[in-house]
Amino acid sequence: MKAAFLAADEKTLRRVFTQRQIQEAECILGSKASVIECSDAPGGDEDFIFSTWGFPKIDVKKYPNLKCVFYGAGSVQLFARNLLENKIRLFSAWKANAVPVAEFTFAQILLAVKGYFPSLKIAKINRPEANKLINLHPGAYRTRVGILGLGAIGSLVARRLKDTDLEVWAYDPFVSGERAMELGVQLHSLEEIFSECQVVSNHIANLPQTVGILKREHFFQMRDYACFINTGRGAQLNEKDLYDALKDNPTRIALLDVIIDEKNFDKCILNELDNCFITPHMAGTSGLETERMGQRMIDNMKLVLNGLPSEDEVTLKMLETMA
Image 1: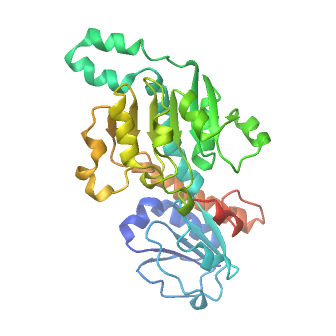
Image 2 (image 1 turned 180 degrees about the vertical axis):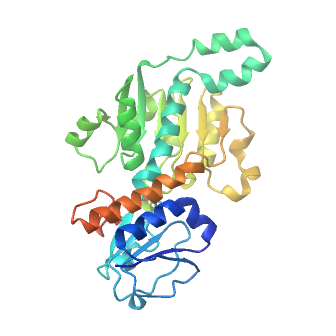
Image 3 (image 1 turned 90 degrees about the vertical axis):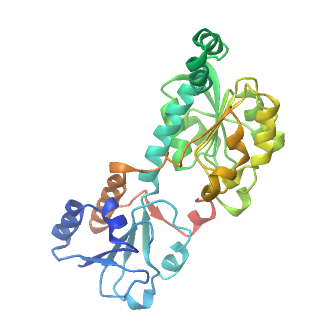
C-alpha cells in the first residue's frame, strides 16, 4: 500500500507531519511515501493521503485506489462532502486540535474567576486597589461557569472543569441530558447562562446559522465582574453589542482570541476598551503542538489497517453540526 503527504506548501506540511512520522507511515506500509507541495493534487495510485492546512484540491478520479484521507487539522467543511460522496473515508485531527484550545480556555476561566485580568492592569499603578478588586471576584469555589457548545472543545473544557469546585452550566441544543450528566454540566438557555454565570465561554460550532447568535440581549444580562471568553469565531457575536455592554458596565470583562476582521485588528472598536483583552488567535494549535495532530492521523491509519473503528472518522451526517 502507498501513501502521499500533500499540502500547498511543504513547510506547513512538515510542521504537522515530522520526518519521524512520515518514516513511521512508510515502515507500516512497507513503501516509500511521496511528499508533494502543490495547489492542485496531481493524482496517483496512493491508497492513503495525509494532509493539513492548505489541503490541495483533489480530483478523486485521478486517485483510483484512494481509500482514506487523513487530515491533520480541524475543520473539513471545504472538502469533506466531495470525498465522502465518492466513498473515500475521511479522518480529521479536530479532537487533537481541540486540546490546546481547551487548555487555554480552562486556564482563562480559572484566572477570570479570581479577577486576574483587570487586576493585572491596576496593580501596575495601584497595588492596594488591585487587592480590593480581587475580593470583588468570587474565586473558584461554587462559582457558576457557562459553556456555550459541547462539541470537541466545549466537552474537553467541561471535563477539565469537572475536577474543580465550580458549578458548570452549558448551552447546546444538540446534547442530550444523558450526555450532559456524563460531562458534569447542567443544560440551560443562552439567556439563563448570561444572566447567572460569572464566566461564559463560547465554543459554538462555526456554521452559517450561528453567525451573530450572541448579541445585545445576552451581553447586557452579564453580571457585575462577569467575564465573556471567545475562542470560537468572531462572527458568532455582534461586536457592537458586546462593545456597548462593556462600555455600559466597566466591571464586565471580555477575553477575545478571535474577532470578526482579523486582518484589520486596529479597526476593531473593542480594542478601544480597557476591559476587553484581545489576544492574537493564540488558543489553537501552535509550536510543537502541531505534531500532536500529525501523530493522531498516523494512529488513525493504524486503526484502519487493523479494521478498528476511530472516533476521528467524519461522516456526512456529522457535517450538519461540525464547525
